[in-house]
Length: 427
Image (spheres, rainbow, N blue to C red):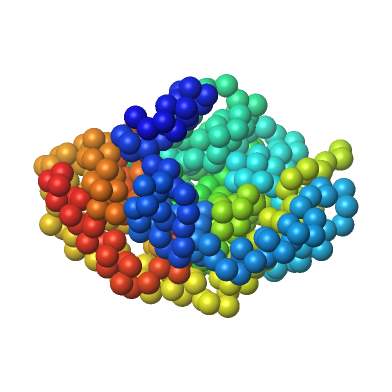
C-alpha cells in the first residue's frame, strides 16, 4: 500500500470508492493522456467520469482560467458577472428551450436538486416519476430519485418517487419486443401508473443512463411519454449531465433523439462543459424558472473562473466540431469493439452512441451479470495503459468508455486493442 493510499484511508469515509487494487494517483495530463505519480502514461478513456470533455490541459481553457484568476476569482451571484451572462446566453440558445432562463450550480447533483425544487414548486406536488436503473446524484433528494440500489444508501426522501419502465432496452419484461412495441408497452405502463396516483410534478430521465451502464431506450420513447405527460400537466426534466454537449455524436443533447414533441421543460447539465472545472446548471422556460417566491443565490455557482473556463471550452468544442468527431471516431470505435465482443464469451452486448460506449459482461454461456470480470478487465486495461470506467444496474458489470471528444482514430484503435487484450485475459 502506498503512503498516499494509507493516508487516504485514515481520513476518508469507508464509502468513498477508489478504482483499482493499487489506487492510481494522477499527477498531470495532456490531450487524451494522463500520467501517474510513477511517471507512467495512460490513454484516458474515462475523462474523470465524462468530465474532461475536450482534452486534458487544453491551452484555450488553461489560458482563460489563468487570465481570469489573475483578475478576480470570486464575487458570487450577488453581483453582475459578465462571464456568467455570456455563457448563460449561449447555453440558453443551444438548449432549444423557448424563453429559456439559466441558473448555474457547481455540480450535476446540485443541478438536479434545483430542477426538482423548480418542478415540485411549480406543480405543487412532491411526487416524481423516475426511470428504473437511473442515477441523478448523491444528495439527499437526488438519491431519493435514483433507481439503482448500488448508489442509493437510504430509502428516506423528501419526495415520493415512482419508477417507470423504459431506460433499459435489452433487459426487463419488455426486452423481447421490437422497438415500436417496446415503446408502446412502456407508454401503457406510464398511463397505467398515472391512473393510480395523484398527478406527479415531473418525470426526470437521462436520455442515456450513465452510471446505469450507458443503457438507453429506442429513439422516440420520451417523445411518446411527453404526449402522456402533457395531458396530465407533468413536466419533463432531461438530465443531460453525461449526454450533453455532443458526446453522443448524433445530437448535441440526448433529448433530441426524443424531440418529436418538443424540448424538455427543464434541462440539467454539468461535467463536460467545464472540462474539469466545477460547473453545473439548469435551463428552464421562464415561467418554470421564475416560480420560486423566495430569494435564492449561489455562492459558487457561476463563479468568474469557472464561467471563463466554460466559455473557452464551449467555443473550442463548437469551432472544432467535436460533436462531429464524436460521431465519426465513436462510430469506428463502437464497431471495432463490437467485433472484439463477438469473439468474447463474456461480452453480452456492446452499446452506445458517439463516444459514450458500454460493454456489458456476463458469465459465459449465461445471461448472468459478471461484476468480477468487469473488475478484472478494468485492472487488465490499466496494466495495458488504458483507463476506463465501470457501472451498470446489474451488479456493476458494464465497462464504461467515454474518452475526450477530441479522440483521434489512432488513439481509438490503440484503446480498442488494449481492451481486446484485457477481455482475452478473462475469457
